[in-house]
Length: 249
Image (cartoon, rainbow, N blue to C red; front, side):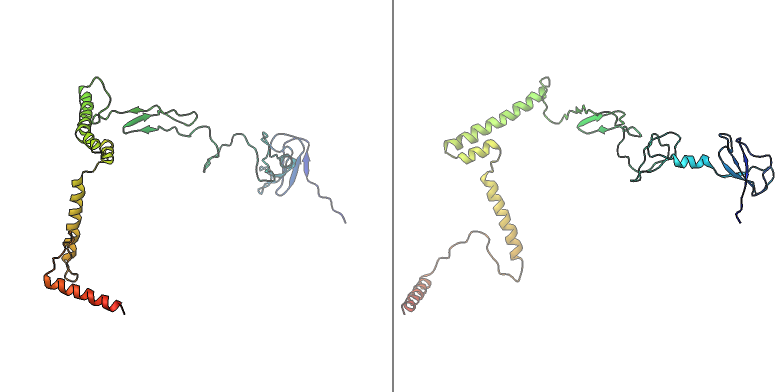
């Protein structure tokens, strides 16, 4: 046998005067606290505030949810899990794909021989670096008002001129083209440097090698030919004759 369950109802948006424990009611009106909402009596019953458990007010919100940025609408993600929004107020973490400006402005500074100070920079506009090159007083900078500068220039030309006159010109007169080229380009290496280096290397290697008791002493200097005596010359000549006789067989 079919059963019919009825609940209290009202055409307004309020609640009945008394709603018993577990008793439900529905308000057909709009607005207010209970309009378009289904409610159930409080566990204490009587005149205590009923609890709202559903109604068309909430089903309409779900039915009209949208992925677009629509005011007062529930957010519905699209097939890719995305949705559109305007301003989101939240405590976010991570990195943004794009940003108009830095959250906190910074100052970019360059120190050393070149100095620069950007002031406050938040990334909202381009940054043009206009630097200042500091003067290093120990170097001969161009300053026509400084007598010391002219002294340094004259000193350089005097050194170069003396080298050209006393070294390069005689080398050219002797057709020593490579020497003249090295003198003028600063790549000239005097012969005494080469000899000094060779002597030091031989002394270093020879001294370290000949200090050992296992290896025989070796003279790392120039080898001198030993002068043979008359008897040694005679024996050497006999050996050569014997070798020649054997090779004829």
